[in-house]
Length: 248
Image (cartoon, rainbow, N blue to C red; front, side, top):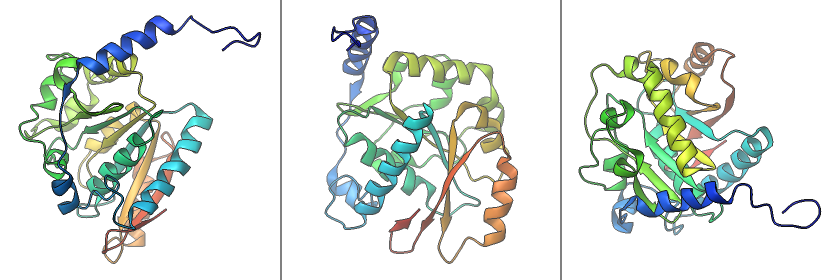
């Protein structure tokens, strides 16, 4: 709507094309039983822990919209902190808002885990997609009206090189242009394990760091923050407690 009250039609062709692309994505039905077993509590909202993710979703949406950002990397200082658990629940919470188109991508190329957590079998090779060999409409899956998944079940040996490739950036930009998501959530490797996360940083707007209660030390959080540097903003640290609840 323009200031004089008329409908702004300038972006209608692009919006209609995005709708067609979303419709063309292969649909996938996520099992509520599988999600519950893997503590994806944001799906059914029967578990009170979902409220923590609703709060995280709202705070991040406000911060991202204010800055015109859309891409969030979810990582952790070390392995075993629950970053995939947080990425999945955050993405599902975002996608529950009808106006918030969300794409969830498994960029932990060495040890992919999102497909297993979501109960999706044989999602294909994300390395083939990132290398430009597969069109987005032939690779991404539609888990809801505004919820798309880019999953992986094949470990990638040259992970850091692929994540740093110009083609990877081009593929992500193409996906963004075609699908027009408001939020893209990347499940990425731990910061201190290898250089994969650092190699991918130019492709994100901000980082959400997941620390495990009783496991992650304060020094590890500080080391991870130093490794991330100042080029990419740290959106916050999520403390993942043993019972599956989080604080932000």
